[in-house]
Image (cartoon, rainbow, N blue to C red):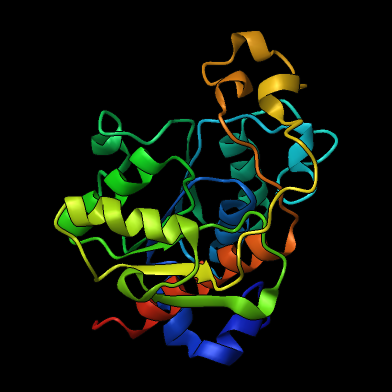
Length: 255
């Protein structure tokens, strides 16, 4: 009989659909990369999807983030995305956390079983801690490098962090991971496109925050140091690519 994952079953077979339904994937960060990663994971039929983000949706997110709509501005990203994912697959267990990933929150957010972790965090300290902690716990992880200030979809690549080139974020991540004793063994999505300089002086959130209720927010835009330009195309490709890698690895894992 036809069902919402019939198209997936034609591709993967009933066994593949069952394996995804019985798997658990966690996405950290629900921005331009993470929102597309989360939706791709959910639409693949993963049965347990955990999503983590501390932030609210901003008007300036509408150009690139799936959950950012006229009626969702000012609401928490994790809860809005959770509602969206439940409407895609009501049978899935969707677990949202409005949390900032850190050393202090890692025990809570990494508790339980994780077949794969998708890292779409921008904050370097949090990103490095998540990567090293997943490595320590033996949790497979794929991490997004810099998608901002890029526009060429043909230059997006997946590779081990040790083999990345050009990407400024990847270069910094390599150096920080080396201090933790990690030089390879972590897959990343990155771009070979050179970083483009902003076309305008910084007019970002730090100086001109327009988010609702900004004074009551724990993590105000006023604390953001740099706001970089981006539109949907490259972050979306990064996010869907990360999801694709995770899905294929879950399907290929020994039973």
